[in-house]
Length: 397
Ligand SMILES: [Zn+2]
Image (cartoon, rainbow, N blue to C red):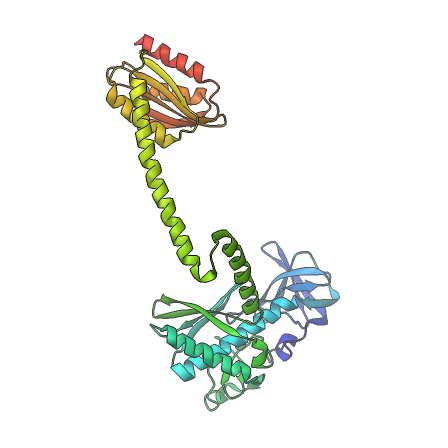
């Protein structure tokens, strides 16, 4: 005969004096088996409970060959113990789970959309419906039907029947687990639903408080429908309100205009980026002219507010304008600098080899091709030494 646990008899039992009947360890994690338990092991889309056994944290609970293993953060000695649920978490699960029964029943009976799977998540839950498309109007109609049955405060209760009576009772079931023996547990929402289920539920649909359908996603062969119920509706609304207050002050716009305000800021950023690219190009053009006209063959220049893109653009332009000049160009600040080594095609110099040496000297790294080598460096203080290295390389050839 299958054992019936305390959580199955009374989902509102938050603690239980019981006894450790087995202790063990699995993959380095201690577990205990209790004579009876208030802890729901995971199953049917509902996550397992958490809580404490004699103040030791129970982090996970699983059913293994009919025995319920409570995985604990520290060893629990044999003998009498007090098992306590993390009740707010469990009650939240009861609200989400009962909401799922209601949504599933109404989706099937009023709209002919069968439920294929259920998943109770940390933030939102989802139901996989065997229907390829759902319109916003259909979802509104489903949500309204659910709200109406919550207001009706229908009783939710459990019973047990022999498996051969399931068909006669017209029970909604996705099939019994393999190897099921003995009576089957039924969960009934009066007038709405009769279902095989081993989970935990609230006593009245009114305790669901509210169900908000959120969004849908197309999936192979169906539609995934996300929802929140109970306290989650209020928490989620509170989060939205807090975010709206932040956004109202950040964007200086009322809620209805958030999207337009963000779109306008993004357009501005794009416009500024475009203008910045044009100005960088103009600046690099003017700077390369000035550098190309300098009398010395090895040029050194630093641009405090320059960035890698500017240095590269400048190096390319300088290379085009003077085939006989070489340059060490740097930008940025101590701790976060950039450099470029460039040489015209008539300058005898192995730019890549020299570039690698400069990168080491300036405590950074880089790479390049042909007559240009660029890098990111941590120190610009040894710029003069790098220039001397460059000079030496030019004199050698
Ligand atoms: Zn259930």
